[in-house]
Amino acid sequence: RREFIQRLKLEATLNVHDGCVNTICWNDTGEYILSGSDDTKLVISNPYSRKVLTTIRSGHRANIFSAKFLPCTDDKQIVSCSGDGVIFYTNIEQDAETNRQCQFTCHYGTTYEIMTVPNDPYTFLSCGEDGTVRWFDTRIKTSCTKEDCKDDILINCRRAATSVAICPPVPYYLAVGCSDSSVRIYDRRMLGTRATGNYAGRGTTGMVARFIPSHLSNKSCRVTSLCYSEDGQEILVSYSSDYIYLECLICYRDGLKKQVKLHKAIEEGEDLGLELRNFFNLLHPLRCRFRLRQQHLPQKVLILLPCYLLQTVNRGSLLRHLDTIHIIS
Image (cartoon, rainbow, N blue to C red):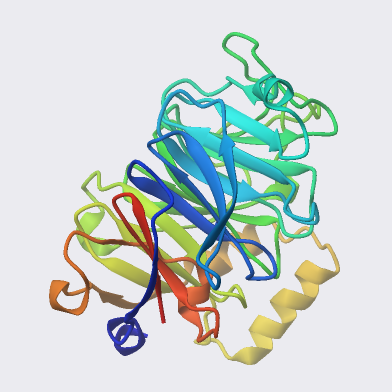
């Protein structure tokens, strides 16, 4: 994987923003790119024709930090968040005034990331500096301006929650990166919100695994990005001012028989309780770590490491660089 990343070369440049590009993502088919920037605009572009398809005045008043297409909406619905904590739910077929009313001001402090759920066009998760991971359902509401709102809190981490990721093949597993150097994995089936009537609240409820690089165990090093592999067996973690780590989430030490038994029990919906937690805590997950060398990349480039960098794909991958999106392959 290290060699693959270091072989990447610049294929195209898209000049689509007037400020730093903080978020980029592909649509489900790999045809289009959604990007968000300090210029508070959302842009949908075609990386192959190098053309901008849509520029959206998002309604954000602060830097956009994360933006995602909602699945199964034909790329018409977008959720985005910004440095002032505001989340916007945007339908590009509606007028700007209607979209400006579809905002959630529940987080206080920066909202760092939006995460959608595979094949679910209605719900999404967010995480922020206030230490909460929140779960919103647009079937229930498309806006919320309630002061000090706690209705949609799924997890209270008691520390800044800086990144989230959902396991692609098993989407009820949720990884949360925090400012205490830890990555925690939760089973969403064991969690709920006040809106659903079964809020647990404590940061340990539903947690099935926690891991941290040994040299960071007594340090506060922020997780800046999380991403599962497509098969859910590995997770890529980047830290502020530290390495990028590839963590193995499957333990082969006790043989495949135990692994198969565990997966069968999960699929059949058994309540594994302590057995499941003990299984995950047995893991020694670190598979490798690496740091991207400057000589292999253009200067002043931040690298984005989503799922598709864990496999070879023909649509290329992305770097973000000031107000420019670079396509690399």
